[in-house]
Image (cartoon, rainbow, N blue to C red):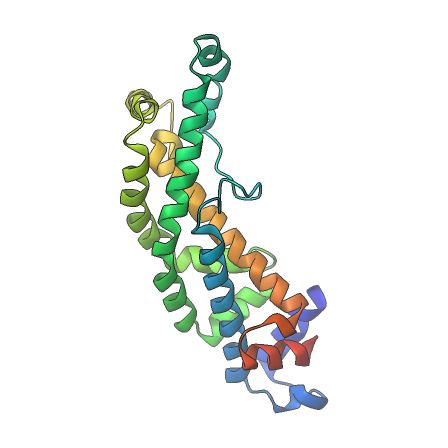
Length: 226
């Protein structure tokens, strides 16, 4: 993996003379190959996660209950309400599955707008560089898109509403911050984390096995530097 990254980075930065097929590739071709791989990865991630069970049945991205709520499980279990916690967690993951298809066009647009400099940063930024790129280009806009879709799924549950009321009061007192101030913001943040992580995983798989790339240019680039 590191050898692949180093080889393509050197090529993008200085375009030295490589033997064989790599000699024929330009900076534009190399960047284009990366774009093809990332677009394929983004579309595959949306398809994988944006379906029933995409989050709930996937241990890598399954969304847990907010930590503050999970801590109440023993008490609620004693009260005979543990089923409500399970129902809420299922609804949270279903909400993420419903929201993810909203991401496809923004992700594809972010790939198409990628510059050679963006490509260099991805290739020199380590294993989380793909995640960092997509987060910087799409997270704010996708948060706005996801929230209403997520809210539609979670608002119907009394436990979610109860949590939001309590969390809101605690947050005002400065005792709760960040994404856990409401069920909707928590689910949205976790859904995006899972989406970006899945895209990065798809891209790593294409680098490891270029022949599975959908685009001919991606195949050509990643095969040349393998």
